[in-house]
Image 1 (cartoon, rainbow, N blue to C red):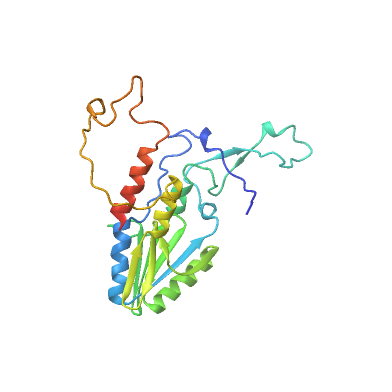
Image 2 (image 1 turned 135 degrees about the vertical axis):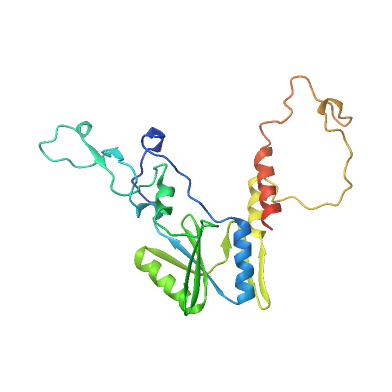
Length: 246
């Protein structure tokens, strides 16, 4: 689907003048796996919600002015758009600190900043934040209260039972929860053009790590050791995600 959206030109912002911190903390895989085990052990519910236009809700912690966008109508006595600018009252997509501003204002757990916990006589609710995706865990009454409260405060998409988070798939079974990365593996194979390949059992070849002494294929003259056509770093990063998450 196609949308028109007014965004800021963050490339013109300067650190220490227009913004300070930009990083918004997100839940990590270890924490998510631990809370999944809590869901299974305590027989809790796990709900997923998505915040619509996340970065437009929060106030800025610095004065930010923006040039008037093309098509903005000025009053008749205005000379040109060059003489005016707009002062932003709220965060805007494109600002470097937008994700940080969305995160500010919450009261979170001191040990894991991405978790927000509410306890009451009726039970408890745990909110996990990953940018604009919110996983909510809790007892039935407190879970329902947390969902209703979030819907009143923000425009939310209620996605029902959580099925995806951090490239992890959550599959509900009769005797527990299965976590796997089948969809992520398929995506990685397509990204590196290996989705048509087939598994094959072969013995590991023992060879030298020194390309100049490799008996199978010595390095050619003026040949790059790591060719630009092979994205080794991205491949290793994708494999590390699989190894560390599941």
